[in-house]
Length: 21
Image 1 (cartoon, rainbow, N blue to C red):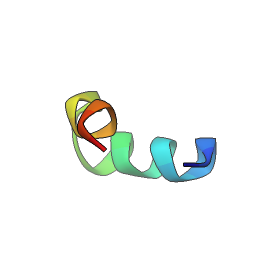
Image 2 (image 1 turned 60 degrees about the vertical axis):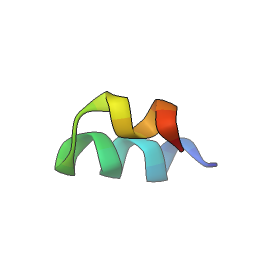
Image 3 (image 1 turned 45 degrees about the vertical axis):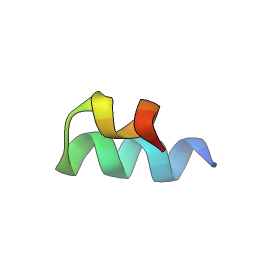
């Protein structure tokens, strides 16, 4: 997973989603 993708997800959804992925 790239940081850019994580940032995009965080912007759209909470950080919880990032940890789940």
